[in-house]
Image 1: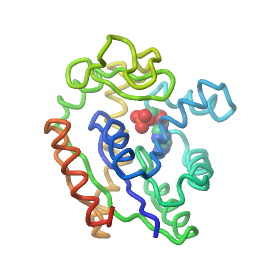
Image 2: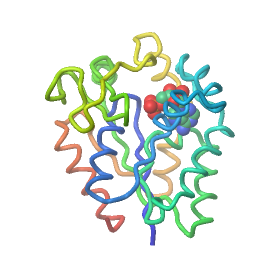
Image 3: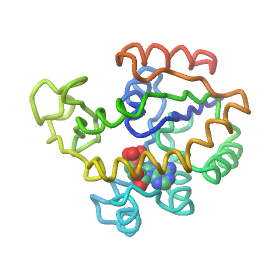
Length: 219
Ligand code: AMP
């Protein structure tokens, strides 16, 4: 039976970094809605052009566009055993659509690790974040620096700072999270799927706590 994990948490909590590590350790696909949008932006697809207008403002891309993109991604063969979802769902409508999609594959959301951190930690993490141009691997200049400044350890591509990581946009993203995504915490808690993880611990301790939470889901 496939395993689907939803990583929940505010921007800067470390979802992307941890999802990369978990994907490697579990062999599950890592699906990041933000990365999918950024790939579309880079390729200048119609979807990318629509998404950009929202992303630049720190707003959410409309549900129908986002849900369609994730449905397509989940139907690919590498998701047969399940996936780690990072950045999706972000609204109640997306969570409901996800449940319907997974039911169609005979699956469901198995566990929802909720990574928390105080606001000053979140802002500091985002401000020091560098992302790799080719694959979206994530670094932090203080907490997780690349071996060579400005170069990805994994694929050697150039590191850049995301435009939406600028201070004004970050504030808006955190606000949007509080308004539209935070209600999902209670949604999944009510289903008994939520596991809280303290994201302000050192990176390895967060990974250990996450792996522990997945044991319950049989991974
Ligand atoms: P992220 O890389 O997860 O921080 O996402 C970057 C941006 O992409 C967000 O600020 C949104 O504009 C957009 N985005 C990513 N995931 C979603 C989603 N599930 N729903 C709507 N917009 C999204």
